[in-house]
Length: 173
Image (cartoon, rainbow, N blue to C red; front, side):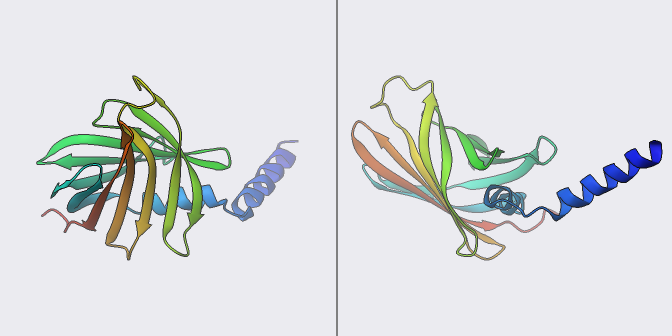
């Protein structure tokens, strides 16, 4: 009986390893390749304006089941986004500088084109539907060392976009 159980376990493992990767799983794996430190700039357009230095750190957590993005200004964490699979979906929760937590779901995953787009699902701690909050996110992968993320943002009926252009920071000595 023990031999049979071992054979079944080996069969199940080989089947799981041979199963095709879902778009969400592939996208999460692609996001995990960002692990490390990044440097860049942020530019607001639309209902807000301004530009400033914005850096990012990417890491994995939960046994590799989630990717954490921490955006910093002058070394201070300003916002954090956690990307994770939810069954067949890729989701994210954004812990925003506006002090709310929009939750978004991937509406487009096209890794051949280097694109993941997220749409708003709901938010926690949103004081009103008109309160400032993230309504979408566009992730654009360049080569292995370049990334652009664009937050779609709305507050008081005024749409804006915060585009953050990042390049991989050299390894720390």
